[in-house]
Image (cartoon, rainbow, N blue to C red; front, side, top):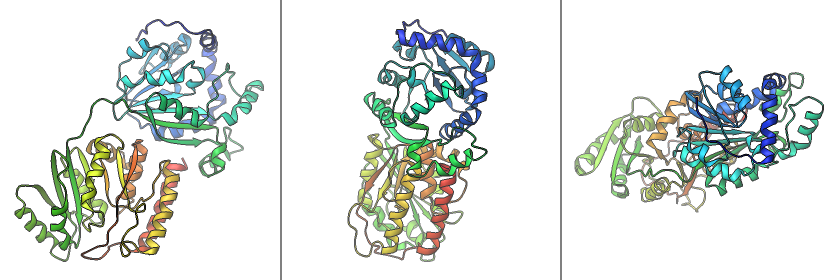
Length: 482
């Protein structure tokens, strides 16, 4: 049992605490009455926070939400002693502590770090939200994600009405915060908002239609702005020193014999140690022999060659990633339409911490006239707009082949791939969806897209375009329509 340092509460918070103590034994009854709302809330939180994580919930009340997330280690804290007593009786496998989360000394006493720090509705009771955020950095690593859930200020009058007529548990006066307010308060405390979402248009079953409304209508533009809930996923910008030193460049190569030697010649030495892995994909133009020749003639460099066991670019990329030893993993398409000379920009974005998943974009600078056909350009812009909406982070070019992330993040992404399944033969969307689900900070690096100097494109506009439309629908179901 944890004992928190004593703290003096403000009169307002003391009144909130007294009310919470008095209502602690009634909370389970109120949760049953609002079971539909709480289940809808939990649905999205389970998407953000996978089972088996180390989770700290601030303002846990009687502990039902923390228990439902099934953490490997769960710590719930609240300043209501009666609520914590109820939580300890109901969930003895979890850890609970009594304390004021605005107290520096109390936060210092907690046994971090955590994978996720969860703050749901608690912002309403705080005197100084910025101070609470600022105290949390010591409980964070680079990978920790702060998840904040709160009600929309648009719903405030309706929620007070629901309390008056007995449909909602009565609450003392709460801070009324818009989504922009939460992001701004977090930013003042050096937490960067990675993404934000609005969810839950219907808090009631609505004669069995509530689930359909929340799943398929609430995510849509216009309707989305009317949702009851908003969620913000943040990362700490005061992370401990964790600077990568080495990199692995994976080059999928199928029928790219003429590009093998130029790739090695043009890749700059930007990391302390640089590993290059060619993954040859059943070529018909002696690509494998050329890779072997280039490796023999560059014995001073760390260059490896693998033969792809399956088919498709995704299989080649994952084959290379699984064999890689670098701190940072990079994809460089063997067609060299993304200039190898630009790789240091991607490295710097990761090394500096500005991004955790770095995506190239070909659609900022003008490109050579033959580099991209008109229909490809239209398709790329269309998919970029749709996926920016689906993922809650801005994309201008989802289909650029050059993507960069830390190997540690790839291993986490790989462990969670079962959520999406083996659906993407290219690997682009598989990595993007996985990065989004992990809450990685995604940034784009503009590059000047070049025309091929050897070989032919292996992309079929119509066959692969229809495949991408199917992926878009799949992503809607697995990411947006939860």
